[in-house]
Image (tube, rainbow, N blue to C red; front, side, top):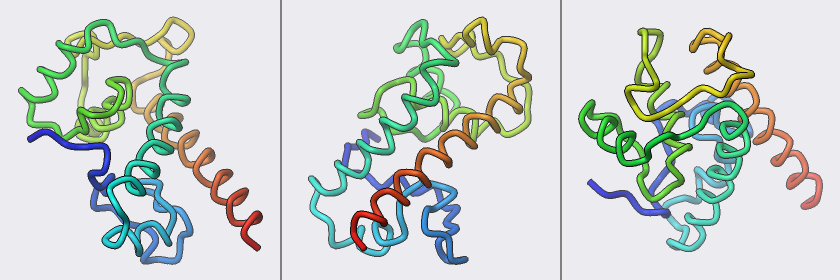
Length: 149
């Protein structure tokens, strides 16, 4: 199933129900989650573009996509949900979330860990990426929130 840029980024792990301003799952702001059904496709695409840019920022210094076609086909072959309207490097979040703690050879997926991060075990690298992604989202939210006060 082809996803669009306006598809929901929800991954079913919503922390805003516990009072978080930024969801630990999809990294949308609580007001975006609440208003999502009312948003136009353009408004949804804007939110997804911000999330995509944060993912790219976190991932591009750590990974290289050797072959996007192989990556796409392997994700599909393994029934891993990903938004193929986004940049291929962003699909790494979906792959790593789906793989959990199991061993994974990224080169089989057409992905390479860049040399400066090659010494990290994949679960540690995944944790680092998630922390950086959360920090970017929280900082953006705080900046956005402070501007609207």
